[in-house]
Image (cartoon, rainbow, N blue to C red; front, side):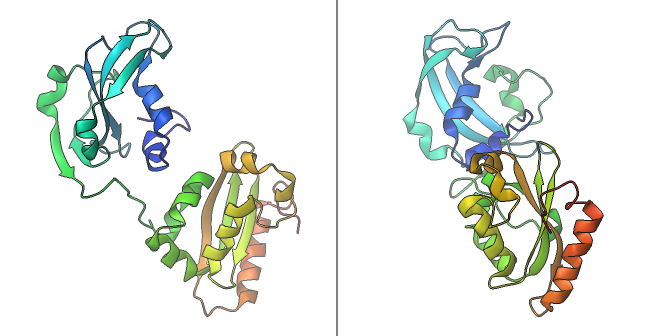
Length: 247
C-alpha cells in the first residue's frame, strides 16, 4: 500500500516492477506468505483514501526458498492473464493489517469496478495549486498532454524543496513555453543552471527534490511583476538565507 517514500502505484507507473514483485513475494519474520503450488494475485491500492485496487500480477509459487525477512519464493508469471495486468480495478474495503490474504476470506467482498481499455495511467494535470511532485514523477508527467498544455500556458513562480533538509529554491518562469520549458531544464541536469544547485549531485536531486507551484500568471503578464513576486517568496520563505537561492 504505502511505506514511507515507497509508493507502489507510483512505482507501477514508473515501470519499477522488480521492486514491486520483491515486495509481493516477500516473507516476513513470523509467518510464511505462501506455499509451493499456490497461485498469487497482486493488487496495488490506487489511492490511500479509496477502496480501489489495481491488478498488477498473477503468478504461481514454484519453490519455497525458506528465507525469512526477504524474498522467499521462486515463481512463474501466469502469462495467460498478462493482458489484464494494469487494467483491472477491483473495489475492496480492507479490514485487516495483514496484506497477504487467502482468496476465500475476501473474494465475496471484491467487485470488479472497471476494466480499463489500456494500462492504468492517472496522470491528468491536477490543477496548479495541487502540483507537488518528485523528480521522477516530473520526468514522467512532463510528457503527458494535459501537463504540457497547462505548464506551457502560464508564467509563474515555483518552488523546489529538498526533502532531506528542508532547504528550498524559489524560481520563476516567463520565457518561451513558460513553466514547461523551465522545468524541462531540471530534467536535463537537475540544476537548471542555478549556482547553488550545481553543487549537488544529479542523483541526489533525483532522489530528494520535489516541485510545486506558488503563483501563476497569464501569459501576457509583464515579467517585472513575476520577478517582484519571486523576490517576495524568497524573502518570505527565507530561501536566500537558509535555502538554495544565491540571489
